Structures are given as structure tokens and as C-alpha cells.
Image 1: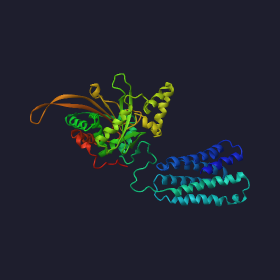
Image 2 (image 1 turned 180 degrees about the vertical axis):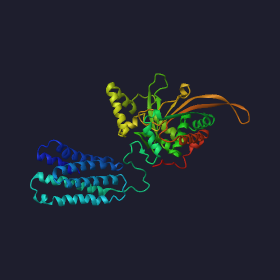
Image 3 (image 1 turned 30 degrees about the vertical axis):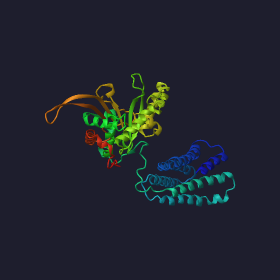
Image 4 (image 1 turned 60 degrees about the horizontal axis):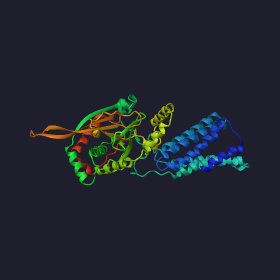
Length: 451
């Protein structure tokens, strides 16, 4: 393919200047298609091989324009266009996994090479100049490279897991079998803030504090209520995976087993200390200790450190952009996010993209706030914990006991799953908050989200 690109560029260098549409369709487009084809295979061929259909369609457009210029018979031109569309469409379906008999491509691409050689056999025999040889070499090498790639295609074995395809994003796969109503709702409520529902609940801290003390005696010195809530939320996702979805671009996506937790952390416990954002990736099979170690590692990385994390560097770069230009940059980022085109490194530092964000008001001594969801990004769930407080409770035997409680609020995007599903998940979480020692063992099974 690289030799084909080189031959194509050399052909027009030898042939002289070319202007207008011919330059764009017969020089720039096929050369760019060849380079894109190479880069996709080398950089992303293992996981995103389906994207090679993009340069194949670029080749098809270039060939169609060439047929329009070179062939006088309109009926033959239409026939050639249909052949191009059929071959590119079939290649797209094969590489996307829609057609399992990929070996059919061997015959199609082999036939393409054979037809080219047969059709140009007289030109091959009569070729004398460099320009004539380069014109033949370009087409033959391009067809041969497509044949070589089709021979190298392998079907992924059963049990190899899900692999991305058209319509997926770098941070999630599209859920394609949701009910019709769930498909329509994101178009009716396109903004996340307008589609948010919230609930307030109260938890008895007696079993949690007993569990926290035991963990601290085991050496987990910083273990606290936040870790218990996070571990319980992780356990929800293990049994109710739809809670780990998000809505973006009017479509619903699943993060699979990647639970991307976002949290604001003060670099120092002083009122004038700046905040920074951290991201922690949990797995549904994580235990309470796994949650503690992963979260502690991220907090220690920013504690008492200058603001030089990836998030802070990115935010600082944005402050150098003039306000009017910054407004356009944010609009452009929204547009890219709508189509799932934001680069993965930006998604990795964005505090607006993730599974769940949690804030604790305990250190501030105030009740939990009902925090809004951000329209920018795709965060679907916002947890807020309040401060601890005591309250007298009448026990079953009539005795009055003073117990500690904590209130919390949850704000969620109702478009990711229905209310009954989310409520069932929250009730399931309460079982672990009432018996947190269950969080020491991984779940027996982790359920997968629907296709």
C-alpha cells in the first residue's frame, strides 16, 4: 500500500501539473486513503480493524470519479459505481463482524486484481515510459494490498469478549437492544440536567462504623465511610450493570466493567487550599480493600503536591485562551463529544466524563446537597454524603437508643435505565451498607449488560 501511494504521487509528478477536481479526487484522496489505511492497521488494527472501511470508501469515491472521467458510456459508469459501492459495503460489513464468511473477500479482492491485470494487459505489453509503468503499478499494488489484507483477516475466537464496532465510543459501547421508549427518550430530553431525578435517603451508621474500626485495626488507617459507600456502589454495578451506562449524542452507552469514579480532592485541609480532580477506575469484582487501595493511591498522588496533574495542566491551558475563543473551543468540544470523537487522553482528564461522582459534606459539617448533573460530558450519577448526626431511636423492645446516622442524596440521569431498575439497585446497596462485612468478598458472579 505504501508503494502504491509512492507510485501514485510519482505518477503525477512525472505527468505534470493537474488542477481542479482531478487533483483532489485522483491525487490527494487516494494518497490520503492509502496513508490512513496503513496507519489504522498499524496503530489500531488489533482492536479497531473495522475502521479500515473508511479508506476503502475513500478509494471507492476516487475510483468512481475516475470512471466518470475515463468511461464514455453512462451505463458502464453506473455499473462500475454499483460494483464499487457493493465491494466497499461488503468490506464494511465483514470488518464490522456482520458477515462471518470473510473468506468471500479473498475472491472479491482477488477478482479486482485479476480484472485490473486482464483489462490492462495490452497497456502492460505496450508500456515504455515511466508514466505508463507508474500508472499500471499504482493500481496493481493497491488491489494487491487489499487482497493481502483480506487474506490476513482472522475471526475472533468465541469468548474473546466484546470488541468495538461502528457506533461505539472510546469510553463505552452503544447499547443497541434497549426498548423503543428508551431509544426515543434522549431525543425528547436532550439535556442531562432536565432528565435528572434525585432521591434522599438515610443510613444507620452503627454497622458501618463497627466495620470501619475493624478495618483500621487491620492496618487500613484511612479507611472510612466514603470507602464503604464506594464499595457498595461497585457491588451494585456487579449485579445491575445498566447503572454503569451513560447517555451521549442521544444514544445510550455502557461502560462495561469500567467503573470510572470522579472526586474533588483538596491538596491540603485548609480553606484556601485549591481543589483538584481525581479519577479512579474500579472493577465490579473489587472488594472494599481494593477500593480503599486504589482510591488512596490516587489521593496520595495529589496530596501536598503542586497542581501539576493532567487535569490541572489541561485546565491551565484553557485559561490562556481568550474568552470569545474559549467559548468556541467549548462548543467544538461539545460537537466532538456528541459524535464520540473527543480523544481518549482528554476523556481521561475530564471530570465531566465518568460513571459516578461523589462529594462528601461531612468535613464541612452540613447536610448533603442535591447537586445538579452536568450537561457537558456524560456523568450520569452524582452522590452526596452529609455530616454524621445522632438521633434517638425506639428499638423493638421499646428501649430508646441514641444512634448515628448520615443522610445522602443521589441525582441520576433517568435516560440510562428505568426508575424501577435504579430503585432496585439502591435497595440492593442498602443491604451491603447494613452488612458491610459482605464487601470483603468479591461477588460470586458479575453480570454483563445487554447488547
